[in-house]
Image (cartoon, rainbow, N blue to C red; front, side):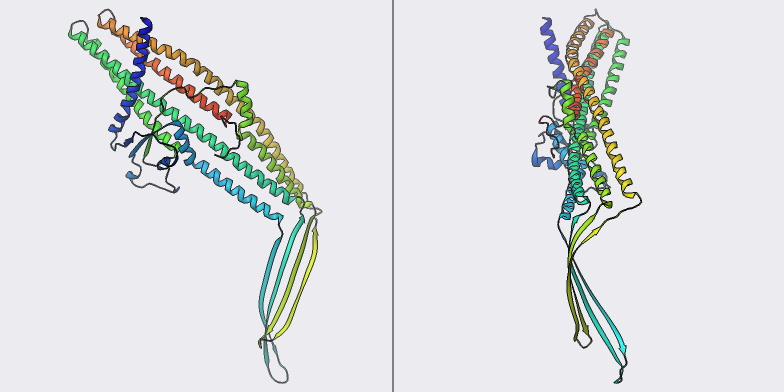
Amino acid sequence: MILMSYQKSFSFLFTSIYLALNYITPTLAQESNNPPTKENTPVTSGKNTTKFNSNPNPLLFPTKPKEVTIDKQQSVTLDQAIEIALHNNQDLQVARIELQKSEDGLRASLGAQLPTVDGQLELNQNGNDTTPQGGDVFRHRTQLLGQFEIGYDVYNGGRRNANIERSRQEVYLSKLEVERISEETRFNTGNAYYELQNRDAQVAIAQAAIEDFSQTLRDAQLLEQAGLGTKFDVLQAEVDLANANQALTKAIAEQRNSRRKLAEVLNVGQNVELTAADEIKENGIWHYSLEESIIMAYKNRAELEQLLVRRDISEQNRQIALSETRPQVSLFANYNFTNTLTDTLSLTGNANGYNVGARMRWRLYDGGITQARGDQETRNMEIEETNFGNQRNQIRLQVENSYNTLIANQENIKTTEKAVVTAAESLRLARLRFQAGVGTQTDVINAQRSLTEARGNFLQAIIGYNQSLNELQRAVSNLPDNRLFEIR
């Protein structure tokens, strides 16, 4: 009999929370001065998500209230929210543009492997005044000079190869930055989504508490009318109900703020409000030990690889700096021509010729400037190595904190679930005793508060578990395929 009672109480609990969640959403919409229209069809992937994209104009500046009035309310799942965020995130868009910029720089560096061709034309006119025996003569002369030259740097102290390698590393660094921001976007979206679920749960719990306190007030009023209760009991029940309504009002405000926060993270349009479509449940299982998680994080985190790439870039900068005091050897071939015309349009001069040769330049001493710049880059390499060790330690701490919190929340789910069943049964018995006149209203109120607290603890344990799992996935990154440097 006790087991059946627990099962009924547990079923009643989740039924109440489910009904409250479905009840409160349309209630909130009706309370708004400009109620948004709610679309019950969840967002689907692909083209349908484009209607939630932000305005393509980054300089959009609303100036009218209607431009920021929420007129559309849409429920999204966590996966859909992540898809929208990865499409709309402005930091990610900038990172992709920076990647394209780095690729342009690589093409420019590769162009140094090819010879250069230069052309030059010059047109000038001059005149002189001659006075021969036959009279004064003023003669004009026009000259056309031209030159074409082909040049190629055979050796420039290793600067060309260092420039190319540096550009390749910069492209790689940009790819890693896209990867890092993608993972951070997933993490921030998950956090905002779980926080909204938490606020939804608080609204549902507050709504259920109002129902419980309303029942207590009705019982107190009936007992007073029957002469078995007191006016004090009725007043106390009214105060408790008023406090519960106040808690609901506060929960609704926090729910609205969380919805706005999710919309901001997803960077959706100014007129869109998002709600959580997923039910509150454990959102996955972590299959790895703490030690395995730490090793995976070391392998998968883009932040560590970025520091190594920056170290390599500093090494290439060092080679570029040192190339200034190394021999510079180049080949050249040019062709020159000159044409001269007089004012009588007669050709008085025509000359052309070519040159083929090699040049070598070697700066034997520059006052120590080159060596000093090379030493600067060496210091940069040492800084990146130190940062690598610091980042590695931070990553381990993140993994350990997330892992330990995940385990604790996982254990709390079982404990708080049992506490909810027990608290629900205690409230049922306290109310029966109060209605029978053998219990006190204080017993009922205490039982109601215990049930409200147990419900909150249970849902907090589930949401806390999901948040810890989200943090652990971010700390390890690139799950489940462990594909580091994937462009998303």
